[in-house]
Image (cartoon, rainbow, N blue to C red; front, side, top):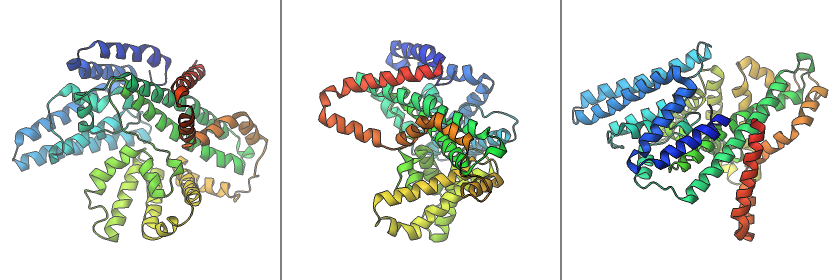
Amino acid sequence: MGLDTLTFLFLFLPASMLVFYLCPSKYKNASLAVMSLLFYASNDWKNLPILLLSLLFDYLVCSKLVRFGSNQKGRRTIFWSSILKNILLMVLAMAMMELGWITMPLGLLVYTVTSMGYVIDVYNGDERFDGKIMDYLLFTCFFAKLYAGPIVQYSQLREQWENRDLSLERINTGMKLSVSGLAKLVILAGGNIQIQTAIQEITPGEESVLSVWFLIITSTFALYYTLTGYCDMARGLGNLFGMQLPENFHYPFQSRTVSDFFNRFNITVTQFINRYVYVFLGGDTNGVLSTTVNTLLTTMLMGLWFGIRLNYLVWGIYFAGFILLEKYFLMKYLQKIPPIFDRMYTFVVVMFSFTIFSGDSLKTTGYFLKSMFGLNSLPIFNNAILYILSTNYLVILLSFFFATSLLSLIGKMIRNKVSHITEIGGTVLYLGVFVATISFMI
């Protein structure tokens, strides 16, 4: 019962909203926490004990941190026991997944990182431990953000719970975001995955330069629309329950620099790594060598967020190289050229990075790069790839279009000229998108 299933949309979600809205205010968080655990159990019941034991351990650690008060030795001991537990849990799970021993437990990275951040903040005095275990469970494992985030801080949600906004405007915003995320998941991510699969099934004798290019393009869009689709749904569903979750992707493919791309792609994870790793290590305050090492470490961690694989590590190193190159050399030139050219530069750098990300080994990445530049004696194109593109061109065009902010700009222009019918037109448009998306799911 994923977020993009009919069971969720027409059974679980309406039931959750009914329970939530019928509950008195003081029980709303508890009801939503219970529904989140039920959602988890319906999807991954075998790993529910891992979630509960891990989160309960961190909850008790926070409780002890408060009780120890000025006993710094005791506080440090239990603090590091929590940090090491969380790191080991993530590393072991990802390593076992790469070895094919297990499938990644649902939401493990999201709830573990969220909880670890809370423990760190309580230890540093940046967060107040209020002892409300149901609030803590909702904060760490709200069902809508288990798949891809966003990562949130406890104080962000506590302030909203104290003045919960359940207005029609908030609900309307939530429904639009949810529909947008669902369409990205079902139509764009699903469509690109189908094209990617079709290209991968081309027999070796029918490969071409164009087929390799579109293998990288579609695998990139499949990842992007899967992640941003889940995150948009999380934000939309959060609004339906009176929670405004932070944006996790902001048109990263139209960034003006590679550094800008990194700040727009998986935003809350980048912020987490910057806050708890980069800044902790001194950031860029201790000279060029320190900045280089810290940048390498943070970008490699961003790569490892997707799994323990050499290609993901190299993907992070690749970005670190361009970020450092921009910081110490390129930026003064990029600031002087027209925006269209620095966006083109960034787009090319980012798209080539996914030759690393998409490969299951560096050898495969090397094959991709050689093929894309015609060094493997492949034809430029052939009937196999032309047939795939001719039957799926609309998905590819829409993928490029929705990776930009053009639709948002068009919407603003329409609102400025015919504001009196914008709301009605927008509602009709989203209803049409929802119906179209459901038709793809049936």
